[in-house]
Every structure is written in C-alpha cells, then in structure tokens.
Image 1 (cartoon, one colour):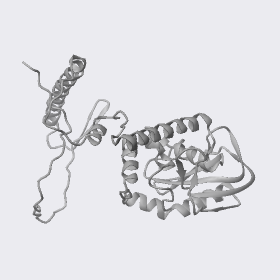
Image 2 (image 1 turned 120 degrees about the vertical axis):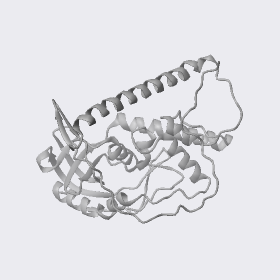
Image 3 (image 1 turned 135 degrees about the horizontal axis):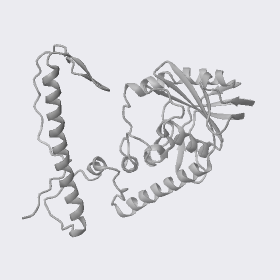
Image 4 (image 1 turned 60 degrees about the vertical axis):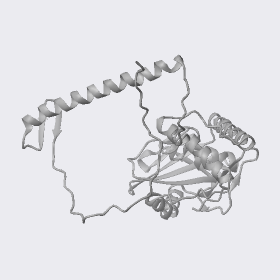
Length: 315
C-alpha cells in the first residue's frame, strides 16, 4: 500500500531499524532520513522488485488470511494513524472485523497464536501482510512484523493483530498477537530518544548521532575526512593494537586455509566431488554465459572515505 505517514516523522515500519533489529538499516540511517526529510529533501526511493511483489500480492495474502481466520470482513484504511502522545504514525495494511472468534493455535493449518494456546478476536483486528523468500518460521523475525505491529497497536489503540506471511510464494502462515506492554514501553522510549536527538540537531545544527552499530555504520555517519590529525591518547592504544593483532591472525588463518585447500585439491585433481570421513567436498565447475564486450564510460573524479583503518606502529 502507498505510504500514508509523513516523511518528517517516524513510522512504525521504521521501528525495527531504530531499535536495532533490522539487518538492513541502523538507527543512524533512520536519524539521517528524518533529518533529510525535515530539510525538505525527497527521501522516498524505489524499494526494488521484492517490495513490488509484496505490494502486488498484498490483497491476496490478506484475503486468504482473513478467510482462514474466519473474519467477517476486512478493509484497507485510507489514512495514517497518529499516536496520541508520541511523534509516531502508522500505515495499516488492513483492518479485519471479527465477531467474538476464538482462534486455536494450529501449526498444521498455518495458524500460530504467539501468546498462548488461543486468542479471541472481537471487533477490529490489525492485519499486516508480509512476503519473503525465506524458509517458513514458527515465529517471524523481529524485523518481519512483530515490532512494527506493536507500534501499530500503539497508534491505532487496537490491541490484537495478525501478521500474515507468505513464504517463498507457496506457504502462508498467520501469526496472532496481543499487545505486549514491555515491548510497547521500549518503543515509546526509543521514539522519545530519537525525537530528542532530532531536537538537538534542529537547535544546534549538529547531528546527535547514535553510537555506530558497526564499522560500516561509522563510514556512513562520517563520510568525509579532513587532513588534520588528533591525538587519541593512550586510552585507544589497546584498541588499535587489537586491530593489528587480529588482522595478523586473520592473515595467518587465511594462509592456513589456502594451504589445506591446496592439499585437498592436489588429491582430488579432476574429480568434482569427494567424501572425506564425515565431510562432503565439492570442487565443481562454474559456468558463465557469453557477454558482449563492454567499454567503461568516462566518469568524473570523486572521493570517498576509506572504509578500513590503516594502522602502523610508531617507531
């Protein structure tokens, strides 16, 4: 469904990244997106073919989930839902209507009650549709709906919801949830902290970044480098030394792997597969299609910050 929430405010779909559950985005990515939006920049982008298929199949997924759960009807809201107190909004895929329906936990039927053996649905029920190529789960990954759904419950004040996940295009599973107060409290704290960082930036002009989640996150936060030098002092000598020592170990282990591979390959020779005790080894051919000659077009000079630290011991 189209995005209905304002770009200048956090949406529930961004909660997994903000709270550190997403493998694709980090809290600083969300902070940067909201800063860009508040500067008036266009922060919408093409999500890719997987997301396009998710949108194309959304109604069909919701229709089948509603049928299996015995819902009376369902509809797609045309407005965003705004939290009463927090700067948080939600676009809801659909709302189902139930009349005192008790759903039993039944994995054989693809129905998973996440907070007990059964759940009673009465009145409006949140319906969220997901499509993934991943193998079927007995509980969706936190970034595949559970955190988002709890945020949607907070915005809509509807405390029962379903995440309908179509796995690999062939298996539909419906996961039923009630509101979870500890998770909702954690969401409220995360949203409040984010808004505090945005306020600091708006008042000072300097971004109040989260501590980088990893090295690549730091690259994105500080993409430019000056020619000046700072003294980190002896407090960071141990960290620098650890990087040097670990790189040396990686190099040694890489060399050892290459040596053992050469030993095995020298015995396998022309054979594409082998059995060695409890191990199955393959050394197959990799085939490539013919491709026309390509001429690399000219491009302007540009600079990017080096991703890997260069560390040398001072003599």
